[in-house]
Image 1: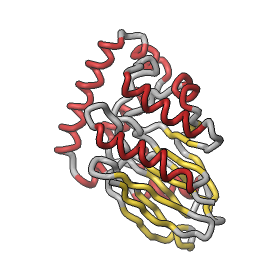
Image 2: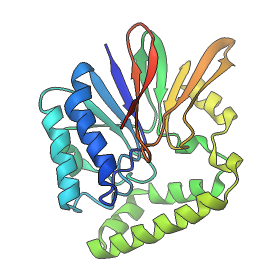
Image 3: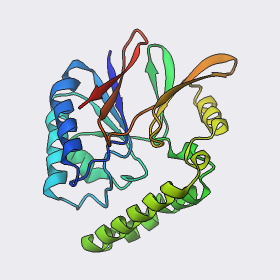
Image 4: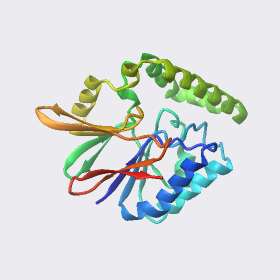
Length: 240
């Protein structure tokens, strides 16, 4: 069985090049695999399932064309698209995963996450996350007119860019203690996540056994797909 993992694609109308790579990936590459996992930040921003632009519709139609063949696409919320809801899932056939989800990869329990909750030193973001994931606060936002939500989202993206450009590297990266805590919680020896935009494979010891943390790459410059097979082979494919 071949599983594909991607994260931080950040699809947006102003970057048709990223969408083109993703469309080509869906039409050509997934046919050689058994499942696709999108681990958050699929969109640069998602302000509600009622934001039915031509661009968003094109994305949803493309996803549906794949899932209706029986090919499973699993989706996880990220820090930029946590408002992806039931209507989106119905229109695409994607299956939503919880924030922490364990799969078996070649006999190894593997924890999948977006990765934002691993950055425990980023106190300001975690406070925002707690508020923004509150159901009541989400409903208040979704009740606002679409144009108002678009303006709010644009303003928040600008603030986010400023914050990430000035915050220290240590704050923006994961905390090893939290990595180990959540892996132990799920009895996992392998963790795959995105969010930090720092692709790498980290090896360490957990419970006196070898453990691995694989960080997926963002798609800002090119596409990046982690391919895992039944033999335990792990390979990153670059798409241009």
